[in-house]
Length: 124
Image (cartoon, rainbow, N blue to C red; front, side, top):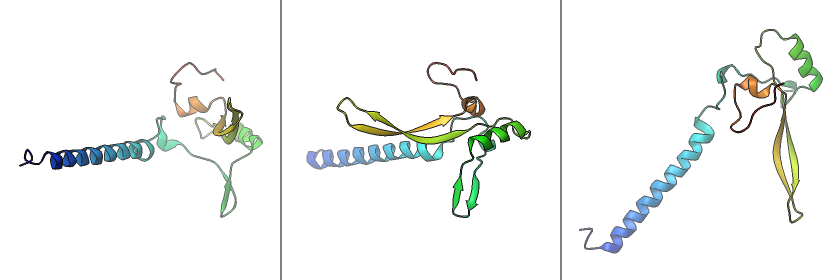
């Protein structure tokens, strides 16, 4: 029957191919972003410290508070810090591109138990 109507057959196969390809692409993104755990050791044991000054607002701790916590806390195996920022890069045409960037403490990657994909980390 499909041989009698080659246009219909081609349209049906093309529709199936597009549908399967789109579903595969969407699931791949969803799997990478939402379903997989981050590639760090002991993910379930990672905690985040913030100060709550108002029930609606949670802010990070200062560098002084981080250093005090690092000296005095004995119940944690590691304590690392991260600070979120944005950096501006000037392109060859003179335009500016803003990119997200994080400043991290020297033990950040070892605390998470991750290794660099390329190169090496400076000890510290």
